[in-house]
Amino acid sequence: MDVFDGTHSSENGSKAPPELRLAAQVVSRGIAIGKVVCLHGLKRQFYRVEIRESQVDREVRRFRASIRLALRQLKSLQTSSTGKRSAVGIVDVHRMILQDASLLIKVEEAIRNEHVNAEWAVKLATDSYIAKFKAMPDEHLRSRYVDIEDVAQRMITALGGGRNAVLRLDKDSIVVAKEINPSTLIELGNSEPSGLITEHGGWTSHTFILAREISIPAITGIRRVLRRVQTGDTVIIDALHGQMILNPSAESLSEYQNTAIELRIAADAVPSSEGIAARTLDDREIVIRANVDFPSAYKVAKRHGAKGIGLYRSEFLFNQFRGFPSEAEQIAAYSQIADLAGENGVKIRTFDLSADQLTDQNFEKEKNPALGLRAIRLSLTYRRLFQTQLRAILMAAHQRRIDLLLPMISDISEIDQAKSILEEERDYLVKRGIPFGNPGIGAMIEIPAAVMVIDAIVSTVDFLCIGTNDLVQYLLAVDRDNESVADWFQTLHPAVVRAVRTTLDAAAKRHIPAIVCGEMAGSPFYVPLLIGLGATDLSMNVNSISRIRTVIGGVRYSDTIDLVKRISECSTADESLLAMKEAVDRSWSHLIPPDVLNATRTRGN
Image 1 (cartoon, helix red, strand yellow):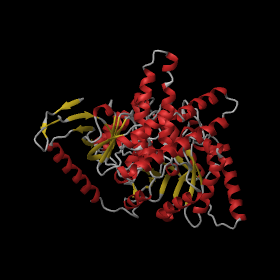
Image 2 (image 1 turned 60 degrees about the horizontal axis):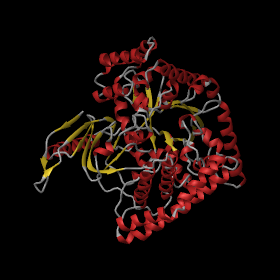
Image 3 (image 1 turned 90 degrees about the vertical axis):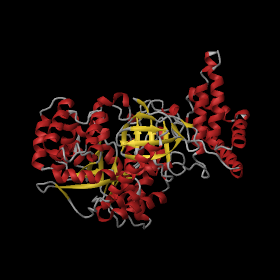
Image 4 (image 1 turned 180 degrees about the vertical axis):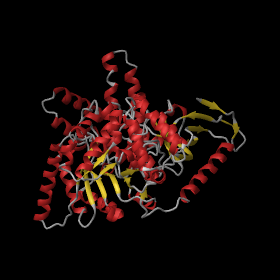
């Protein structure tokens, strides 16, 4: 619902736009106040940046370099598409567009005359061409605008390969977009955006998982958000109650500035729990680990009592626009995170990427990337890249506690192939006299097939990680990032509960660790259920640790077993949700904040 609070005066006494409040869904708690920066683009997202006269020639050179790179990519695609006449024809058309002198001149003129970054200049030039094609009466010619859009995207993606990009956020920037890619958030991470506002995206999307990990307040679900705001607008993100406040009044600014200060003071006042085990009231220890992508995050996690890193997402080292990190870069990154984790160790998940993120390797977009060439399948397909990563992990593991984790495992054949490649890399290092470690091997349990053959899997690995987000997605055939089916993303569906229990039981019988590392592990609402199902090892984003410690310390293991018995009798997700809420109201309402219960209602359990 939109709420207008009336107009207010600007500092110079002129009539300012009215304050506008828009309801939103909270996906990362907090308060943020700042100036809007509107993001555009699909794979590579960008925003308008004004450049100085002294930067113009450099920006033109960067644009020309990107055209050369894009043409090389198309030449490579044409070579790999030999025999596919339609694909070769498309590549030819795209190459002609990239070499069109009038288009290239328009882009360079925009850079020189408008003093804007190359990405924005490409948008200006190609938007005008797209508009002309869309207005053509001939249907065949009209449809060619799609080729212009594709080429524009390739040009913008290629610009990401330029080391001299001028993109950098100003202090207190609020990033607004239709949707924000995880790679974009990583790219902007060094600029420390104050907050995120999007039209699309769910609680379990990788972007917002990352936002919670690095403490960026975020809200989503605001329709046509890019039509409502402009770059430079003042906005408040209220990611406590779920609203965006555009053009806030002086009173609103003062109120939220005070609230933000109170939140920071409260966060700083949390006592250190470093080295203190988390135990239930009846003395059952639950190990808490951290999901970490940036080394700085673990320092905070350790202070809150985390014992090592249960999930390090190595794909965040991958830059979609510059490619895979080198062997040296990987060794340095893995060594750094392992040194921080110390004797408690780190579980490094191998690259969990999809084929459409490899712009040089895959021309035709996959219709359903979640079911396509991704994760372990991608690693085994592009074996050379996988060899480099495994070799880097082996070398970083020398005198360090590092384990490697294989994503999206469906059966033991994938594990066996990975082990074989790992052994080859060991032999390679032995022959060259290079020291290396002996990492344990774990499997991510996140698709139904893995649960069905879990007894075979536990016989061939050293540990398991249960990725509850994807497990729910694949069990229920519900896209975790599609808000139109959010009501069907039911974490308490009986199939999900049984799959988690089956996996935990199999690991316990084999006496190997099983770490729950999805969003269930970081939710105070679900933790009592996980404990009752047998979970003794939980890994979560840094900001969840303190609240989860509170829940663990306030429940009895015996009570959680009773809860599981009650849930096991439920035949629908709604019945399970009701049983959970009754248990919370009866015994644990003081442990679970109201905003968590509200978020549970809005996320389809």
